[in-house]
Amino acid sequence: MSGPRSGAAAAPDHDLAAAPDGRLAAASDGRLAAASDGRLAAAPDGRLAAVALGGGHGLHATLSALRLLADRGVAGPVTAVVTVADDGGSSGRLRRELGLLPPGDLRMALAALAGEHLAADDVTRATTSADAAGLPWVRLLQHRFGGTGALAGHAVGNLLLAGLMEVLDDPVEALDEVARLIGARGRVLPMACEPLDIEAEVTGLEDDDPQRAHRIRGQVAVASTPGRVRRVRLLPERPEACSDALAAVRSADLLILGPGSWFTSVLPHLLVPELRDALVASPARRVIVLNLAPEPGETAGFSPEQHLAVLAEHAPDLRVDAVLADVGSVTLPDRLHRAAAPLLAPGGRVHLAPVAAADPTTPRHDPAALAAALAAVVADPGARPPPGRDAALPAGAGGRRQA
Image (cartoon, rainbow, N blue to C red):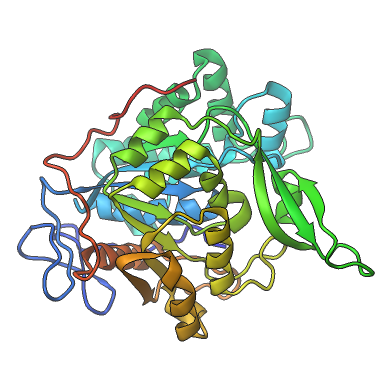
């Protein structure tokens, strides 16, 4: 599992680069290129269009890292493509009562792009109009009502998104409106414009017949199952992808899948046929970011290699250019390298870097460390170069969606 954490960014008057030790460092040439020492520097006309796919805390961590890269001119525009199968908590209540997309993961992605991850001293130094306007709104978006009444447990941002979805009758337009309100550094898009359900094939639920498979339906039920999840599918089985999300994937220079709840936040993107085909066919640099630890329930007892194995089972045609894992979370590096080999495109490789936050209670990615590691991955001179663009796409670029 991964989540937000405050992290120090590079000095504000320097470009961002990945130094050999994996930390953020200043680059002097101002160019975006894979230099001989593996550094990545920023150029005003060479920013990478980055798309991160996932949901929940894992996606929040990736977007927080990309936000740091975007702020330094390395990445941008940043687009989040978010799962829409949540059926628990505030999101589940709004989904059941109103028939709308579950807003919780969408809200968290918006908060990440608006700078919610900034440390306290960064907040006090926020001087741009976007920062000054966005940070109080982010705190409001994330605020949950207390008490015992009808509003108890609801996040303000969930209610705001639900209201806008009803008023505008278009979830993507609603998300774009909130993004403008909080000064988000990019777009947040649903992977589909209809709410979906997850159904899992689970074994190990019966002591006398542990291999007997059962079907469990619902994201919360799958995430908390005491059995072993074998496969997941979406209901309806072949949902139509959000056209704006599809356009973002097709025009991306950098595609990032993970970290996050593997069966309920990461793999669902590979079960939307158009989205999966776009990922498979993309010339972009494709990166898998592995979790720091198995999650109780859906991936209990999973090794890093098992995470890759189930991903390959759900998308056998997908090849990636990099698998990024925390060096402290991989006890058997050789085994991970062997497991990743069938997934890697020519020139691709496993990257081990210190990306975990110093949190003794909950495994979480540190945004600054993850940003440095992603910069190093993109700058890897041995991998396919990202396709690049003559000019960065505007944050609203892409074909019209299908509401």
